[in-house]
Length: 80
Length: 89
Image (cartoon, rainbow over all chains, first blue to last red; front, side):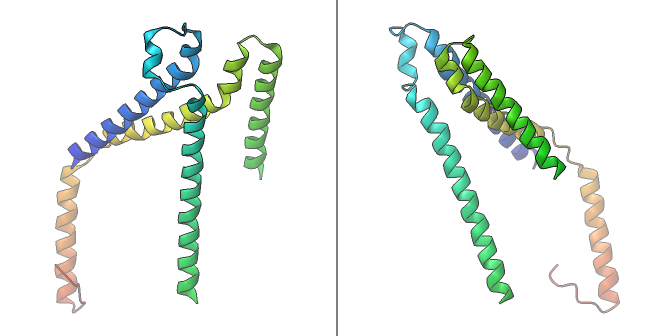
């Protein structure tokens, strides 16, 4: 099954690299480009550059705490 | 406890550096505001990249897997002769 492992690893690294380059472009390079360049079409407005990661982080944290809470409740129920 | 102190001091140093950068205005202001979140996102990205690279380079040992299966069947035979219930096969 190492082919499946390799494929998943490749997918993960490509996703991370693409997210990194897109975000770098969005935050660092785009403010220096003139506003009537065509490339602005491919990027959302810059306010989203803050909202999207913050929203994703908050979602991740809440999912994590829900999971921890469920595990704690289940263990307490088993002991009682 | 020492670990927490270390991590907290690192955080304080980074925020002091960021506030200093804000005051000095070397980089344009709007860039400096976005810098912390950029670093957090890039840190997450780096973690994901390391996981992906580790997955791709993980060494499987086919010979060891075969030997392990042989060991398992041998142990099961041994215990079955001694009368222990070894369950499903």
